[in-house]
Image (cartoon, rainbow, N blue to C red):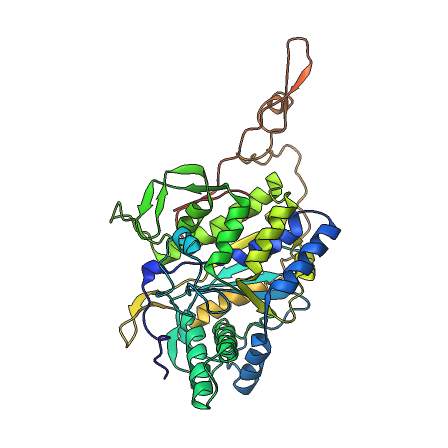
Length: 454
């Protein structure tokens, strides 16, 4: 078993989740404008982004060692995209980030972190335009590794990347290959392939059509482009490790605060506040939903020169498979822009300790695979004829959030118009809807509004 850093427990305070980056990039291509503009951005992005053969490599490894429990078949032309965010403080070429970026990230320098996939999110985009589903995979889930020589042992799901990387790099060096960029990039592809194969097996043989790998700086560049960003937290909270310092309620944050928002996993001002790594997953989901809502409501991406500059920077810190067509993906992902997406975190049984002494998440494999199957291939809803309305029956109760229907009510609040003394209608000031509240990481978080979370 390789020992070169892959299996070691990394400082939890220095890790974070970056799942939201790839979704934001897709949204840039979808929301910002017409077909010509989208085509221009896609062409520029395609020319800069790092292309990888890892997906084909993972398929070869999986064919040689098929999953014994393929419970989720490939579904028509639906698309499954695995988003991987690395713990490395290096760029896609293995070089340290500029000092100003390191300062803004508030996550330490290139001497910390490694090639662990601390962000793992499977995004399922139906071909028919129906609701998309994003599944967050907790990074410390204890699973069977796959996709590299010697795999098959148990480890944290995030560590498959680092094991694959270390095995390939050592093999090439033992063969007399130079320790150069070619060796490094081959090791990176091996790490990606190992992570893809491990996640696919863990989820029940899910076919992964594409992958997107991102680094810290890419998320930061996106946050710079769309700041200020509206978020909501349930209570005052601080964390000296991530730099988080937020007041309760709805607020606008800048790019550096956004880094703290998505990285916070504890409250150092109140040790009784139970804030965990799983709550941070919910923060990541809430951030994506907030960005989606903001893009739709405000049309943030209207500055073409600024957007092009950001995409140029992002593309240098991102890797995708060779078959990913960003323009086609943007067209297929239209449903995301209207909040037509839900986010779910896979459940755990509890926390435990591995034989090596690492903190892990204990999971029920059958429960996980059954849940994924239901999310990606839900059973069709039964078709029943609507019940006739009986004469004299009481009308159905009106939801508290439903639009007013009477003429008196419709003159106030959202969607109505007030009138002056002479009867001239005047536009009414819209009353903002209350933010949906999520007190835990469990259950599905729905798109369409700025959610309030821990």
